[in-house]
Amino acid sequence: MHYLFPAAEVNALKEYVMGNAALALGALSAGVGLVAGYPGTPSSEIIETVSKYPHAGVHVEWSVNEKAALEVAAAAAYSGVRALVTMKQMGLNVASDPLMCVSYVGVKGGLVVVSADDPGPISSQTEQDSRRFADYCRIPVFDPASPEEAFQMVQDAFELSEKYSTPVILRPTTRVCHAYASIEVPETYAPKEAEGFVKDSKKWVIFPRLSYLNHGKIEARNTEIASLVSGYGYNSIEGSAGEKAVIASGVSYAYVKECLKGHPEVRLVRVATAFPFPEEFMLKALSGVKEALCFEELSPYIEEQLLKLAGKYGLNVRVRGKLDNSLPHNGEYSVELCASALSRFLGIELGLEQIDISDAPALPVRPPVLCAGCPHRASFYAVKRAMQGKKAVFCGDIGCYTLGNAMPLDMVDTCLCMGAGITMAQGFYHTDKDSVCFAFVGDSTFFASGMTGVANALYNEADIVLIVLDNSTTAMTGHQPHPGTGRNMMGNVVDVISIESVLKGMGVKTVLTVDPLEHEAAVEAVKTCAAQKGVKAIVFRSPCIALSKPKGKCLVDADKCIGCKKCVRELGCPALTVKDGKVFIDRNLCTGCALCAKVCPANAIGGEAHE
Image (cartoon, rainbow, N blue to C red; front, side):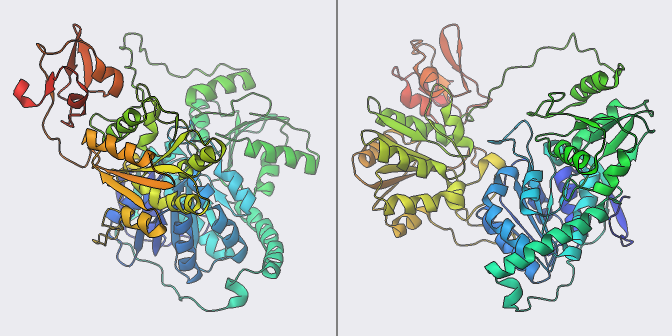
């Protein structure tokens, strides 16, 4: 074990769990008392794991957004309670305001912020690097390379947070979050005892003078932390001394180690605590080294730190990595990519075991698409029909419905970040009065970051049509509840917050609620709102097909089908295919939404009666 602080002896059980689950169990093992966050791949399973395991005395919540989650957790940490906040890297942008401030104010109980980075990106808008945020906010960051390390590091992060009264970032990446491993976990969990909140306005109320004084303390604290983590077991040196060294962090360390099996003459240096940078450790690791190659996903953060270190101490070492194009800046790394770069750097051929896949069938092409029967398809199609022949701009948002940009719907012109569709529609209106400006937002995103944009539109006299795509869940990240679903993560049934009531309370005068699968009614609702001035809203409400049972299957009467393929051309439903010039519906995919039946000009599509 690579403990940063002495660990207590506990009775343990061995469990085979996902990386996110290991992280959650590590937090429970550390005595966490409050867990809050907002769902976002690849982090979502952390909170779900906490809720599934015994957690008496631990408050668990999906907050409306990451900013709210961190502020809830900060209050708990002010009270001496250990608090965990979870999000993906995009959520750290939303939480950056309180994160920067709580760095200056400090905490009493441990406060750990899990920001799961997404190299690729596999399911994100950006490939941003949370280590940069740690440096920017001047708070420590841990970088696990495996689920086992994530389990231990979150415990170390809580200890470090309390010892130095600072929030700490834990930065797993997608492959660590979703890998599986056997973890020894305690048989029981209990929150660490907390003193409670002690009023002290000179400590807890942030003022410019307090920030000025605390800034100096932060820098002094980080120097001490850098010295401490220089002796951290996960900051390691493997292999014999030589003039060349390989530096790695995060999951890249696991890839590089796999490549270097059987090559003990190569020095492998692992950095697990990118900030504060462990200078003492690295000076020892670089002793006698003339050339170093850095492996790290996303930004060249450690590479830059090594260049600074070389300049500061006059080291005669050439640092290579992303900055000299030895390795790519973008995308995930792999064993194969690392082996290729290592072979060039070391001048040896790394013989990785190859599996013959020459006779394997080609993988099917599976572009992302709205599910068969998804109510969002019906919503987009209704707007498209209502606006046919008119000049319109369609501003999208973050969620399943971003896939409305795909052909043949082609109904998402912009997508920036959560909640931006509502405010961007206003920008288009103010600069182009001839367009009908639409903003699409999901029900979960509406609560997370949509209401501010609505208030802005009302106050600044925008003319937009707001379309709330309410499928009664947070579908894209795994069907988590939100304030509009009537239940929370503590397992309680709560009052549903009505989106319509919120909109009307804010001052939106026209708010229509329609089932988008009632196609003609949906089209008329769009035409009605588009004809009015000001801020208008339509709530298209129909449950996600993953939540509702199929209503039977649709079938095509081949005798009636005229082969026009209008249903295929206009809807793009994956259940619709063409065989021998006729449309065919895949019964394994069809959910019976019957939108295709409403589009068919020959009335060739119906229910089970066509069988």
